[in-house]
Image (cartoon, rainbow, N blue to C red; front, side, top):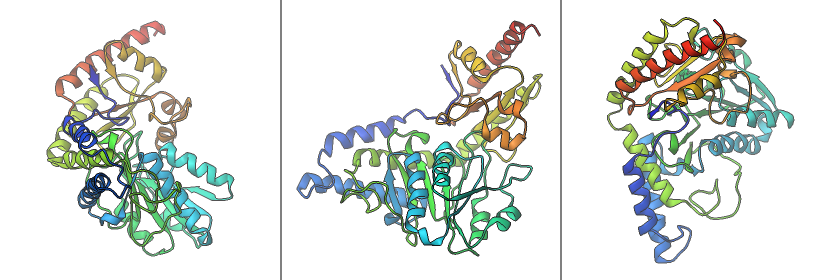
Amino acid sequence: MVYLDYSATTPVNKEVLDSFNKAVAEYPGNANSIHKLGSKSWHLLEAATKQVASLMGVNSDEVIFTSGASEANNLAILGVVNKYKNRGKHILTTKLEHSSILETLKYLEKEGYKIEYLKLDKNGQVDINDLKSKLNDETVLVSLAQVSSEVGIIQDINKIGEVLKDYPRVIFHVDGTQAVGKIPVNLDNVDLYSFSSHKIYGLNGVGALIKKRHIELEPLIHGGKSQTIYRSGTPTHALCASFAKALKLVLENNNDKYNHVLKLNQKLKESLETMNDVVINSNNYSVPHIVNISIKDIKPETMLHALEEKDIYISTKTACSKDSSMSLGVYELTKDKELASSSIRISLSYLTTSDEVDYFLEVFKTKLKELRFRKGE
């Protein structure tokens, strides 16, 4: 099997799974219970919280565990607008965002909020001048991804955060789901930051929202005592402990991992660039882990299933996208409906080998010829 869909989800690291199994076996108590077993589980949860905080460069009371990045994004956006209703109903974002942001903002638009989409420069990054021109006294939130899940474009969150310092009433939320474990993350100029365990070789079902101390949120889930006042429910202490372990492991030797992926990215793109009617949508401002391409006149699903016959796994759009014939992220970057309607995403990992890339390229070339022949070209 050649797995090239790491941006959708990653395989669980054995050490992370061992950490979870140990926590489940040795910490059976409800962390909210006041007896000895409950206290033992609570201390495990506290240790996990401290470890995540330390690795992300924040305070322990700024970590909110969630069920994943989608919940974290919803808590960030809805928590802000419900808490700061007096600040205005204007929100800025981009069209490169994950569906958990775009769909939440569409909901808010129906509730009377004005959602504006920032212009991107030729590299796919936020146009800073456009950002400045769109900010006003009614702006309550700027929400965007540090790394686009479809095309991998990196946004300069430090630069954007510096601009927003001149607007102290505007809260800055960053979706870091595709950034953590891939590129350095500095949260000095960020108010809220979302990420998830299953994107960093951890278990599905747990994520986190970093909420700086000066920010307040209206909870999405009410119900009493938990790990934090901002999210009620029985703390999933075993999942949280495994998440902390996954974060620690994914950040180890990060430069070496990045350079390994970069070499694979270069090999992949050098070969793809020689193929007729194959267009590379990701650019030099994308993380090397994501290579988005379009194949003219061939449906993405057709190529996906053709590769699947040879035990190769890629994706069309992000796994959480609504059914659509066009990738909004690719269209926003290219302004070409044909490219946006025929895009596929190849996502690499430090676990990917050079031989796997070679095999993918060999099979891809063969399948491309076969599909073209069937179309009578």
